[in-house]
Image 1: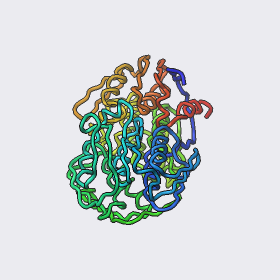
Image 2: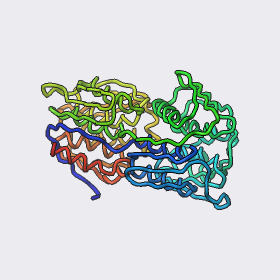
Image 3: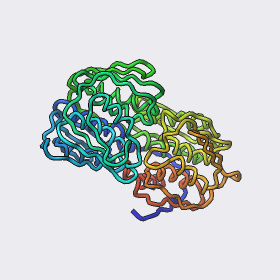
Image 4: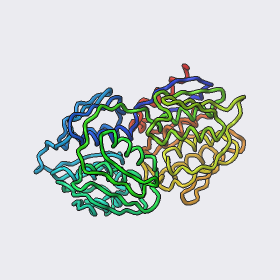
Length: 433
């Protein structure tokens, strides 16, 4: 792709879209398939950089994978690699991959070094490593304590009870849970404090149960018990990515007269990010939720959205989508309780502050809260948006660009290949709808 793309404004549109499969579900299904006994088939997986990193890592570890854009088949169970040969895994900037594999490699015989790009080396992993060490794992940091790269000497884990405090990322909890069935004594997590992005842990538990894992948890997710038992291979179809869908839903909400339906994604979804539709509804958009579809329509009679005050701790990835919508809302928008935005693919709190300000918004950061007011005259300023090698920054600011007559360019648009390589093509397709 070119180094920069100028997004032309969109007119009112009516569209039915099925985005690529969920990154979170694809990578969880890949790892659970490797841990299960037998040959699993994952249909309609996301085929993007994050999932390619996971596929390649599992191949290097020794699993038999047959993969293309429509399906992935994995023969799970025992690792077939040479345990005497050290294996280096390059996970790029895929936090889901490096965290879940850091836990899983503790189970497999061999020495594994997990690393990624320079940004990954600044993304913390210490809380997960501490918990794994409680279970008897042998893990060493190769550079700075608490951060990749790290080396795991695998073999087996007895499991048992592990106590953890409030964690920076739900991915640590997910990584621990998914290895639970393969621990000799199962796994009992005792969690003190709230889990950020809690729906992602609920997603993990739901998918584990589809693979036959026996789990029991209290309503607050302070106690989660996973029984030691072999999971079974399954056939599984990945639902569309709710995070990717959010950009098109936001566009329908902010462009007067527009309507967008996402097929394959509805109230039955395992993904918490479908909740962005409810937030857009609070702002004045109309929504329809079915079991397997979701529709968002712009406010009637050309009305503007209204600012909201919402806690997005359960779905922090939607902070960028909401920030883009806030540029077209009357009144301030406050996004609360999203401190872990600072440890994502980039420091998203700082990136939002800088790039929203370029567009003329007034932005204030207060701890883990973000306050946004649209330009006082209602018009965005022309700007070149820097994306910080962060797919969600690129896609969320593309929403702002497509909904504004101002000249807005997105730098390094190819960063969307992390989760949605065809995003800009699908955005352009709206002009024909």
